[in-house]
Image (tube, rainbow, N blue to C red):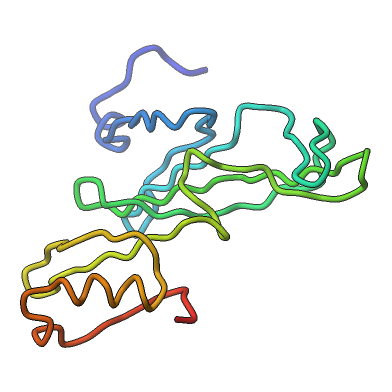
Length: 160
């Protein structure tokens, strides 16, 4: 039977705090520090239904659930990993499956992208610019006072 008071040894083993994430529409299922020092936070949407992306009908029939891992900036030297259990629903009207949205965690594929320009030596963000296409990036590079100082460019998740 659990006691109301903890011994010094128990308090030492469970050091830490619960950090409120304030992600609207999400409920924390579990928070724990992993063996490698990562802080793993598991969350799920608080709603029980979602609107079908295909026909707009309100759906309650859950098809399955898939975890999506999102990483955040470190917290006191610990990597933070948000595990979002995204539910897939089955629409009884149009007979198609769709995944619930997670607007609290940022944009998804097919939406607007930004490009970040960094000085890796100084460890500074120089500019955040809208778009990820060649013309968008070229426009920002042309505005630089010393564009010859750019030594390398790295682009992820973009065919451009």
